[in-house]
Length: 149
Ligand code: ADP
Ligand code: MG
Image 1 (tube, protein in one colour):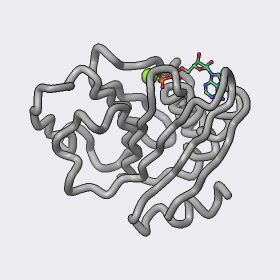
Image 2 (tube, helix red, strand yellow; image 1 turned 30 degrees about the vertical axis):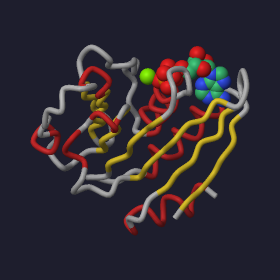
Image 3 (cartoon, rainbow, N blue to C red; image 1 turned 180 degrees about the vertical axis):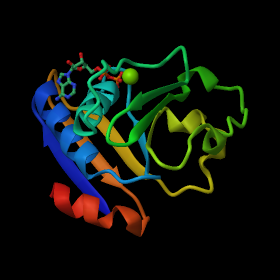
């Protein structure tokens, strides 16, 4: 399954995230790929809003994992710091299975192989224009993707 969306402003990306957050269910894993400045954290801020999280979500580059409490807990990973370390983070032990997991820089996380996540890729098309691609083979995300069309 694949869904491609275009946003024209940061606000539109947040609104998309908000909708995704409101549709999220326990134990979902969403990965976010894209260059620096593509909008991964902006999208995550919208997701947090959709979960009813009022705390400010910032990029967790120096902490690997930040946890926010909302309708579901949000586990926000940023694996950028793991580049080249090839270490198994044991991320499944770090989450309790009740929350939504969002992972920035999943390419540096070694233990995602057993998971078929919802893969989100953000492309910078211009100053404010972004292409956001959602892709997965996991049927568990079918309804979510349908609702975002
Ligand atoms: P990343 O986490 O991928 O490095 P950020 O979300 O931190 O990216 O930064 C994205 C930057 O691009 C922000 O400054 C944001 O205001 C800007 N921006 C401009 N247009 C958009 C858009 N359509 N969607 C998301 N961010 C956008
Ligand atoms: Mg970021």
